Length: 415
Image (cartoon, rainbow, N blue to C red):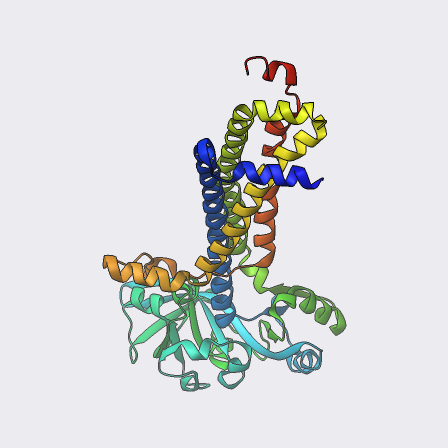
């Protein structure tokens, strides 16, 4: 590209004399592109922040991975526990007993998972102990038949600390009068509130020895729950650990499998929002087409003079392509900076707006969070900027090509 193509292209974008309206339209094109890019970055950042917040809350109350026997129980779990703890990347491996059961408090019934844990070891596997709002995990003692209920589960059962609930196991005991379900009365010694309805409504904790007696497992356990150094590598690590144990085989799962629907729905929503909001960028690109077409129409005489002075069609094409590229580049860069700045300060801005309007945009009872999280990922910014700039570059093709086809004789006929 020669110096004069750049000089003439940038001069046409500056406001002077009759060209003020054209420059105004070019400024509006930059503003539209800035708005589209900034909006797209902010929305994607909010989706990223929501995903990170959801991931952190899930990892705070659940194990990173589990190893279970193919038959549903592990009999030699103590030996396996020592082997798993020696594996690199494993921070903790704790046994647990878990099964579905029915809980009753008077006429109130609710189904939930009953998980038997060892209180001292449970703290090493999850952060659930930090979410116990009443009582403590230490209140779960072998033989005392105490239980800690999720807050939503306790509300449904209308149970409070100190009340008694009846746990009904799904398996029954054969008697001469028929099969009688196994039942045991447990005393509520605590409540926990994790902020995740799935756990607060569907989980009851008890001592592992009491759960094993209720479900008649003897010395066996359901499996081992693992805490790993890098939760994002849990899927590969738990499979490597299971293969190193040998034996007849194990059934393994991890937190990404157990909550796959959450993250799959977020990814689908994020992709759809990217496509939908990209329409704003496309509209801004159409504005660039209109701006350059107006410039070409107004500069017919100038183009003809350039052609008579020796400028070829490629030179004219580059002259007008410079204008579209500059508009696209300016709108993309300003939009990226604006979007990143808004996303980084979104919580404070939303908080100020809520205070000003006297309302709350996010109800914690519905969305499990009261603040609007946002996290800017560099790959998203690059992707948005790349797509926006490509659309703007394509938008310059037709007006520049039309300018290059201008015939000098026809343009100067009426001058």
